[in-house]
Length: 105
Image (cartoon, rainbow, N blue to C red; front, side, top):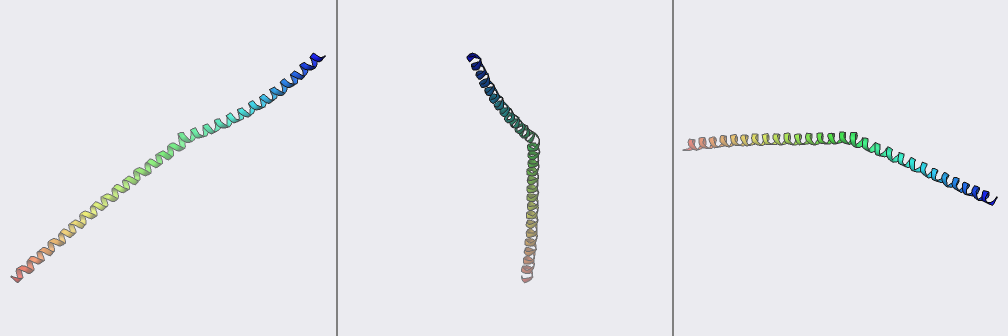
């Protein structure tokens, strides 16, 4: 009788322990599943969204460089025009000086 009682008590403890372990296993499985979902999301983001953003950034950087180059070309053209206008004005002034000097002499 006592052995039966001890066996029954041991089986109940075993059931409790098994129940507790099963509950822990379920919690761990849920945690693993959630972590896997996060990994999948991040992988998708890195594979797709990150790539798209990276391409967009590269495109914008390239466009910015093209705009800077274009602006520099315009500045160079303006500088050249200014130089030519100043040169032309200087020539005209020199000619007028010569004309005035030659009329005085």
